[in-house]
Image (cartoon, rainbow, N blue to C red; front, side, top):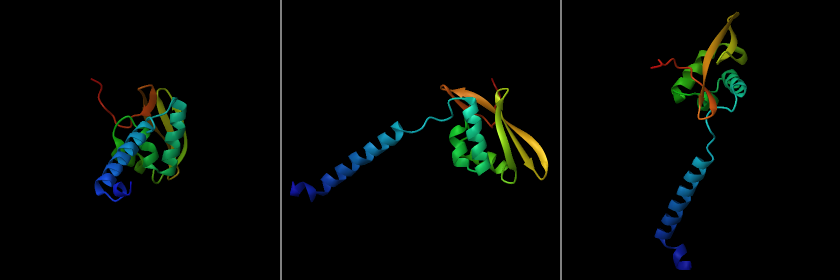
Amino acid sequence: MRRQLTNLRFWIMVFAVGWLLMVFASIAFWPEPGEESPDQLAVEVTNALRAHDFHRLEPLLAVGGEDVAKSTVDHFKTAQVESGTYRDGAIVVAYSHAGTRAEFRLPVELQDGRYVVNPVVTPKG
């Protein structure tokens, strides 16, 4: 036993097995993208935009990943997000900027049984 504890090959093997187990566990428990209902999605998107946190917005997107999340959040950097609701197949984010009220629509899609937003305009073909 003492010989095994001082053997470098033993520790390399332990490290490799431990690393593989950690990767497997993190993938197995990775949260699903999106939300279970469009109303929950509207709440989460609104909270992410209010907090200007693209890391919270990114898993709610259908496409685009980090770059699209950053640009969407940057759109609201100087705005005051007032509310977000699900209406007519889209999340409508009401905000004000320099005293002017406006709305921003994010189309909602259903992917793998979960609702996600698609801030990128893509042609249907």
